[in-house]
Image 1: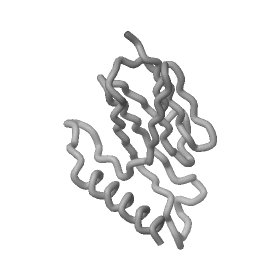
Image 2 (image 1 turned 135 degrees about the vertical axis):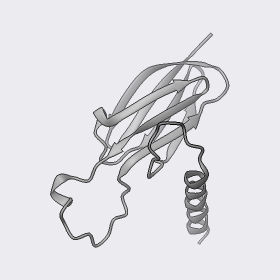
Image 3 (image 1 turned 30 degrees about the vertical axis):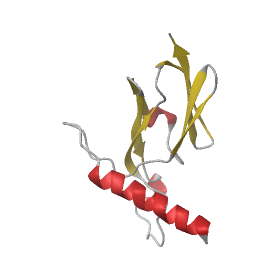
Length: 126
């Protein structure tokens, strides 16, 4: 019961962030925001972003100060575009996720999309 309540609160928080997120001039509004985790070790910070069915070439990563922004698009497979939809829970369309990194200076050292998860490894720099 508590797990379901926590999940609903997280979903409501994500919806609220999407609805009230400030828009950058000249950008299209993203239709969904993928979940992300941040892990810190002694010399690195790792960001994992869940991107099911997203092609690696459709993902852009931008590091700006202590924020990393991941954006791109998940398209419906061509075979399903004319299909009758009975359930559509996996988000599609343009996405964007901005993640705050812990205080410090970083350089993107590793980027890999594996099994629907984008792994971003940042090394700490002086």
